[in-house]
Image 1 (cartoon, rainbow over the protein chains, first blue to last red):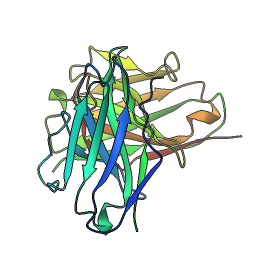
Image 2 (image 1 turned 180 degrees about the horizontal axis):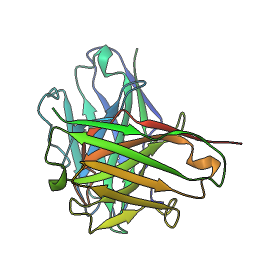
Image 3 (image 1 turned 90 degrees about the horizontal axis):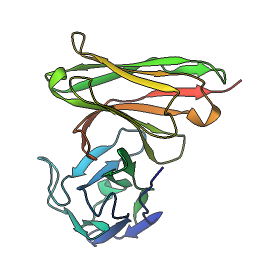
Amino acid sequence: QSVLTQPPSASGTPGQRVTISCSGSSSNIGSNYVYWYQQLPGTAPKLVIYNNNQRPSGVPDRFSGSKSGTSASLAISGLRSEDEADYYCAAWDDSLTGVFGTGTKVTVL
Amino acid sequence: EVQLLESGGGLIQPGGSLRLSCAASGFTFSSYDMSWVRQAPGKGLEWVSGISGSGDTIFYADSVKGRSTISRDNSKSTLYLQMNSLRADDTAIYYCAKSQFSSGWYDYWGQGTLVTVSS
């Protein structure tokens, strides 16, 4: 099964900017939208970015997304303690399957 | 308010079968695609299967293809996942999610139901 590659961890102090990368291929990120999910401990994932760089209503503008070629990234600016969570990228693959990233644990120091 | 409530999880022996259900409310169920996503203990998210609003288009992950069947009953606003020939590596929390077909869009998730495959 195709998997999107993310760094296992990222960290920053309150107020800093943290960026998470997501690497895929031409059959997924390269040809389809990218989505980002936040998963707080013990809870279901929550959509924070859709269509590469759009925020659902209620998601703070501290969260932003971008995509270039077969890679995407999620940036969290003005890091806050409540941002400490696991983050996953996701996309559709042209092999007719959904794919998720390996996940990144964000720690607020 | 959109609500998704999964049920049917539990402890099952290897080789056994299980049917998961997901009761939906707060939206016009038949108008939306639905998906199952699972998460093994301490691991990442894995897409399992998706079904269109009408039920006529279905996709499966290779890991469950041939062993699982996704279906829906729009009259009951309920999504199902029939899982057969269960293996230890099927152990996971199974989430149902309201989704957009052929995309990575899952805008509402249930709380999940735990399936444990063990003898």
